Image (cartoon, rainbow, N blue to C red):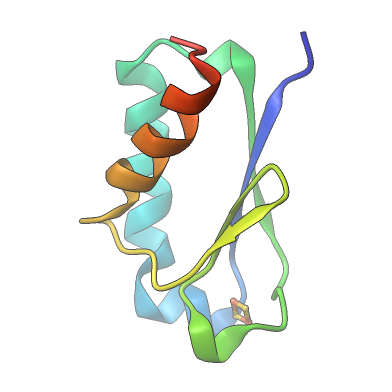
Length: 85
Ligand code: FES
């Protein structure tokens, strides 16, 4: 089965506005739901959408204004569609 891919923007704007904390939250989410082996999680350079950030990509869908507080909702929505856990 192809792995899903989560790319978090590590560009300076998104990083300064919260992606550092969001990154940690995503790591915890993957462990908590035991899906680390099904997801490729990586940092990315600036997506060129700084004004809409902090940004996060899950497969080919981009999420904007992602925070450590709302990222779990986005992850739940995405992964429940694919029923991978
Ligand atoms: S720094 Fe994240 S889109 Fe530019």
